[in-house]
Length: 392
Ligand code: SDX
Image 1: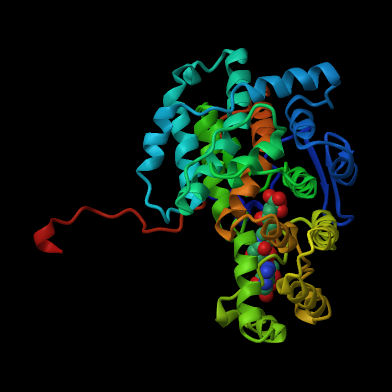
Image 2 (image 1 turned 180 degrees about the vertical axis):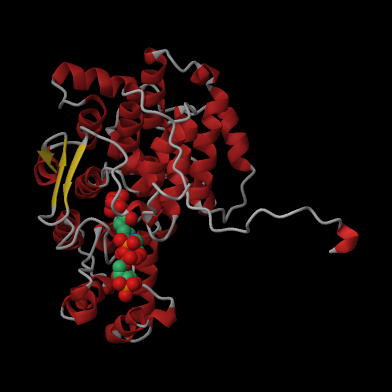
């Protein structure tokens, strides 16, 4: 049985599929969505344009985009019965746990979900997910503030609608700052897809059993929550805060990260694929400087992050292991400047990654890929006879 099976822990050298969606070059630090570079898309496109590109394969023309945006704007309301499920969560429930639960619950509200072969039904579910995730995501924040949840406003674009639901209050209008909306747009684009990362592979694996799209996406949200994956953006800010409160002693934390017995990792550093730099981290680092100065914010953790990056990139331990800042290292500094609380950072990652998960799920189903079912090498007990309990 073990003759032909090779173990590849973490699938470091295993290709799970062929995909036409995203191209990564880990050595050169290249990331393209359907052939377009993220540098171009982050500067020139809107997040919804990029979502359309990832899911349908082409940048939309004006009519295609108008129809897509109209479809989304008319599905942003969430079934009021979902609020009853939501009300059951304790006020300090982690927003990622709430999000994965409510996205899974969406399958209960759309029983046609289970009609596996109707493509138009799938199209409707794609629209519902893109339209409703931001609405659901803001509920946790409003509850944590003791504020009433907001309803979406169809006159606002995707990013402005999210910001309005997050920050507007019945007692005062909220004007979306274009600097904030543009920064959010850029961040969501940079998180939109990343080929076969842990959460995307999870979405594909769950979807390969022909489970419905809501359950598949909910599984991806759960995988993303892990601190080694999307949860790292929250860990980074908590780490930078700890360093700040510890007198800014970055070397102490670098030494701790090098000491295996400490169990501490430098969150926001390292990547399975990128071995010279994460192109997204470069764009986000530059954007962090721009956004904070435009908003007139002087956040001490930005300076600590820059100091930590510099020290780590001069340290043999990190250089020899090719550990560089990844997408999560600077993103939290921008989210914080936009007023988004730390425990919502990974939710922001999920909102950005949603079109990528959808695109990959759709490609896997359209390609009629087989159910995922890897093998193993058995290392347990040899065959043995049953022993009655009174003889054990
Ligand atoms: C994301 O896959 C994707 O594309 C993910 C993502 C996406 O867009 O979907 O890019 C998003 O998840 C980014 C990564 C966010 N995670 C973190 O920042 C957590 C800290 N980073 C690590 O835990 C780690 O670097 C990973 C998880 C990102 C990558 O892990 P690997 O590829 O399995 O590498 P490894 O754990 O085997 O590390 C190799 C060596 C080890 O030392 P040795 O055993 O060789 O002595 O590097 C060390 C590790 O101990 N190491 C670190 C470290 N990361 C790796 N040491 C200190 N601090 C770190 N951050």
